[in-house]
Image: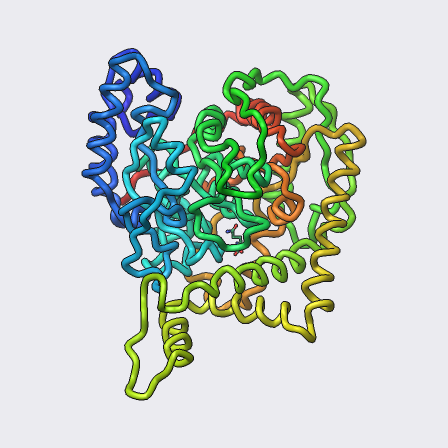
Length: 495
Ligand code: GLN
């Protein structure tokens, strides 16, 4: 039998049904893999007792014949999701020791379906970052390396621990969240699949808020089929999230026919950015050929406001973050600074927030409060909101012309070295999100699929952007692309 940890979610599900393996056996295999992979720093809170308890319950449920798809499948949960009684710190020092009294809706739905939580996964602090280097736990490490070079690479961010864990077979799949690319960029950097659903598909309740109008949860998996299976369990209407949408959740897996004949795929001219590396251009051109060969019609499209997306995102996201993070004041959650004699409440807030938040989070809070301040609100925040509307209209226009999906690169480069960007201007880091933020600003679904390796043997991914609420159709196009690309490479085990 294939090594248990190498199975896909779908394969493991089928083996559980056939009685070839038990959830306890699967869980034990993953717990061992996790313990052997401390060098990747992907899991930051391990929950072996919870995992084994849930695995036993899942085995009983499977034996009774009452088992949903996710039942008995070991997964990892990003540290941004509140998990009852289990540390949930959003990789921040300010939430030190925080163990929620409640469970996020998404992780509850997974738990109700019988999924087995192995532990919590590393990430950028409050999901702000593209390299996992802003985490209070230290960065997660990409299991991939450049050929024989031992230099440690970033798994991307913010869902870097999720990406690293899935790519290194430390769990069958993981939850991620995506505010500006945090599912899709790390998926592309580690050779896995990640989908950000339409805004409103997955409940945000119990997910630590970064930028509420942009945040969405989604699955990070070994392939497209697994993404379809896990997404179905994660999404659905939730009365506790006022932005959650009351729409039926289709059987996404059943929609994976691989038939995309006659589908119209748009290629946006504005995504041909200056200085795009030749390997990314080639990847994109190859992807276009693959979809064409599968019977899709390729059309050139224009999304004219694309160039304003990154600046608009880096006004709107920090604005919302500064407001969301105001609650971390040393009173209600986590860390509180030690005060000196004579310190009052203002000193408590100041010292607690200065000690508890890392540099990138502090930068975002300052940018956010600045763009929301009375004198600058119109010049920055309101202008960015107007740009956002124009970006959304760009997409609406191409969908109105009959375009079914849009193909772009997922990232402007392969995974870079940890520390390589530490002296760079923060804007260099923000440029990682150039192909992904438009999707969050417009609230659309987007999926990253690995389709090739670069000259150094690192994975590269393409992004497909779909019509709102049509994740099933989008996943089917991604499935056709995946089949055509035939990406099967795995990182060599060095950890
Ligand atoms: N890298 C982007 C940022 O730093 C996106 C993060 C995310 O999607 N959570 O804001």
